[in-house]
Length: 134
Image (cartoon, rainbow, N blue to C red; front, side, top):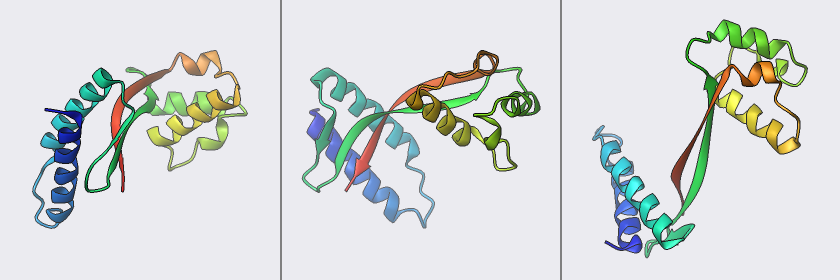
């Protein structure tokens, strides 16, 4: 199957998923399979994005997830975050992996080094994903 055909199937699935949201029909497994297929085809073809006849633009991106390593408790991580001027501001009741991931990216982008004591406690996972824009 061509990348264009796979992208069209993915667009149709997203449309169906939106229509079936009320009926709670679970299409997430099919979505994962199509996303994996699209990533493989995009990699083989060297394409970063593909547009369907329906006007949806699918693109590749990396999702970065930053979380505590196994064996590191939330309390330990929060204690370490509170020790550093650049990280203590995120230690709030709403603190979560998204907050930590955003902080990680912000520090890397600004060129500020991640404190080694903190880096030792964190696990950084990068996942290739497919995004969609209409």
